[in-house]
Image (cartoon, rainbow, N blue to C red; front, side):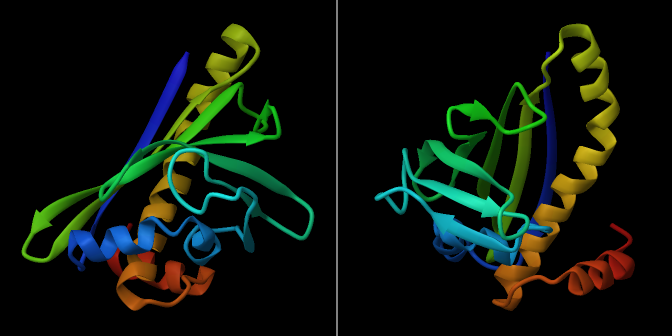
Length: 168
């Protein structure tokens, strides 16, 4: 069974400026909590087929490869490690989508789409993970908002302060 978890935030910059930041897939470590390094591993820097490793530490990484690209508004990346899906998933994708909200603001939507292995047991586990995954996806969206508006990497402390201030 496919699970889908989504979070949305309003960013105080216009769509074109948000897209300029989003399309640079080499900077995920500046806004994805827990990622310490991003490395482009394809010749392509953008568009379908562009691929990156995102590292949680010096040696632990997952690969993310762009499968869909909507110029100016977003993209879909597949999470994997080589030819295999990223653990613990059977399949997983992450969608970033931007929408013009008017008045110089942009809505950012972050969505994790995933399938668990192990049949009914995996479906049960996936459903139990939904709250944790929702919290993680919401943190990514808020961290991106902070990075885009402040133009500096979002730290765990910055995220914590923002969440406490706005009761996220």
